[in-house]
Length: 254
Image 1 (cartoon, rainbow, N blue to C red):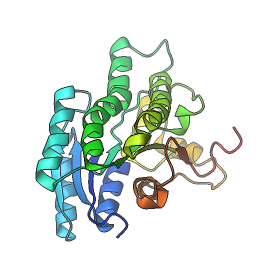
Image 2 (tube, rainbow, N blue to C red):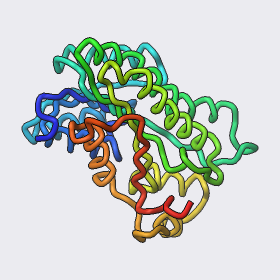
Image 3 (cartoon, rainbow, N blue to C red):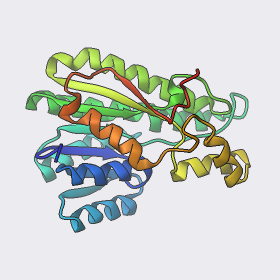
């Protein structure tokens, strides 16, 4: 019960890494607010937590909109009694180079992947500061640390998340707010399969290429969730401003 008595808000919580983290946090004793544009998916995750004996609330949310971000922070506090952990996990990808990326696609990827971290943190940090501290974990990517092919907007957005993480760690350490990010490699989620579709590659071929790393496979959402749990918990009480790579060794030779 590493999060006993804690309240966590997770964006992108309806599926993939967000869903796995919500379920894990609940098993570790946290009350969880599951926020997602997919309101029905968020409800399903909250229901699964309730069925397992945990406490959860689901919140429909467009993380690119300030009003929604402010609302879900307030709703989390009202429903669950506080806010100790924010996991900024919502994200999308567009697989295209600079020529093939439209202005609308660029804006949407940057809004969901980077602007959302700014907005959610903007409203969560004052709450945490008044309560004496907290932990923010952001989902970046290995491609936030090195470049990747045919993923211009995604790479730019995740590099922004890495450096926003560092900047917030510097700004809010004196308020006892730790800010870290995870940098996952290819993980077995719906978004990974969506990449294959966008690139026009057979799913099996794409996944086989994604497994080309020292551990010889892609990661699971549960494995990434364990890394999020570490950063969110008191086990990482002296860790802030870190970018934790969780990629089966994919960047080890970079």
